Amino acid sequence: QVQLVESGGGSVQAGGSLRLSCAASGYTFSSYCLGWFRQAPGKEREGVGAISAGGTRVYYVDSVKGRFKISRDNAKNTLYLQMSSLQPEDSATYYCAASPRFGVTCSRDQRGGPLVADYDIWGQGIRVTVSS
Image 1 (cartoon, one colour):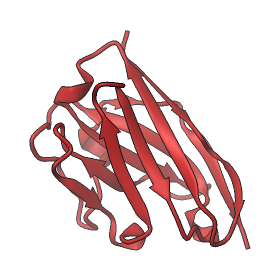
Image 2: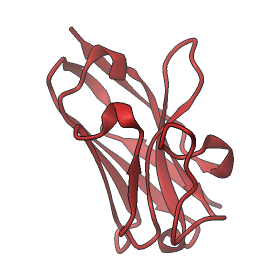
Image 3: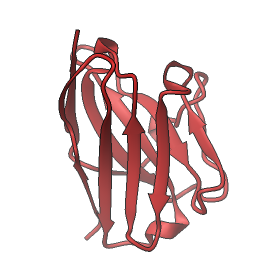
């Protein structure tokens, strides 16, 4: 059974940092694009960033460029999201997801982040709260 499990969320003050992890099991982790998404209450889920199967291509939505960094460790079947200079508008439930349809390159939406519709395997989500 394919499973993604996020960890590392919590509460932080504005300007602070958090690192999210996403542990994968049950499938060929290293072959797929992996993405991070977030959804704030009352808003649509949006793509934050994605990383190609080999880790050579990384994409970010404009609003997090320079503040967030995505990485992956295929040997550990783990995806990471390092978040710095966090702002209250970054508060949301964060999800990791895998896209079996893409590997060498990842699909992107009009804002530059991963396209929600192209990701088929999802974690349960983890809450990040940034206070001002």
